[in-house]
Structures are given as structure tokens and as C-alpha cells.
Amino acid sequence: MLKVEELTVTAFAPFGRFLNPQDCGDPAGSKEDPVRFYPDRVLQQFSASNYVAFNPLIIEPRPFVITLAEIHERTEEVFGGFTKDVCFHVGPAGDCTPPVEEFRVFRLPAGWWARIKRGVWHHGPFVMGEETTVGMVVLPPHTYTNDCYVVELDEAIKIKL
Image 1 (cartoon, rainbow, N blue to C red):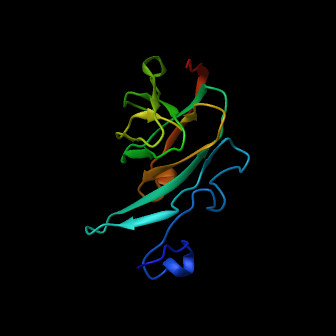
Image 2: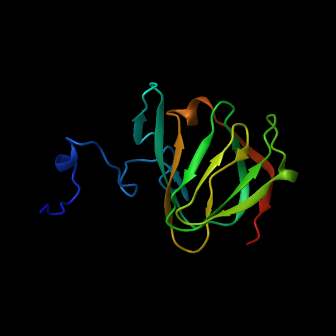
């Protein structure tokens, strides 16, 4: 019979690594920001020598107003696994000007994942409700520094629930 053990760095080291999204160091930005991004906390190597980074994302309740949009020209983005429902905006792929008149907002139920195609406009989700949520963003390492074009919108867009 095997007894269940507590997961600790020392006990699990011979077998791999694990990540507690609530305890992963400093975010890439302000600790006071309601959306805190923790890049490249878990790397996974595939047989073809490709890497992927699992980036914890903690989202606090904030006003349902879209002020930013971003695109990745060379990579897709996958995010999800949130502990609460979130909503997020997307806009058709295009040039360096976000097509705000074509933006759409979707609800992503807790635990679900979404894949954003290359060049599709998007930005950090909004938690639905009054509790903080934790999830993951999956991107190649360093995408946030070498393939991320962020635009501040001329006019904020309110989201209606």
C-alpha cells in the first residue's frame, strides 16, 4: 500500500517540477495591477526540441472596460484553466490597427481553455464575479518580449454582461 505524500520540491525533485500559481514570484509588471502576468514559470520540451511556457495569470475583479488590445504575429496563444468564469475580447486578425468595430466578447467557463490564432486581437480576460481567479497562458518562451504588439485604444469599450 502506498501512502499519499504532500507535494514538496524535495520529495518530487527526482520526478519533475510543479507550480503553485498562487506562489510564483514577481509578475512582469506592477504587483498592484489587477491583471498580473507571470511569464515563463514552467517550460516543457518536446521531442522536436520545441519549447512551450506555462505562464500563471491571476485576475482580480475590475471594471468591464476594454482599454488595450494585443496581437502576436508569429505565435498562437492558449489560455484557460481559470478557477472562475472569465470573459475576453477578440478582434479579427489584421494590421497594426485594432478593428474595434468588429471586436466580440466571449464567456469562458471555469476550467475551459481557449486558443487564439496568430494575429487575432485580444488582451487579458476579465473575471466574472467578485472573486479573484487563477489560470494559465501558454505561449512559447519570451513571446511577451519578442512577438507582442500592444495598443491602447483611443476610446474605451464597455462590456455588458
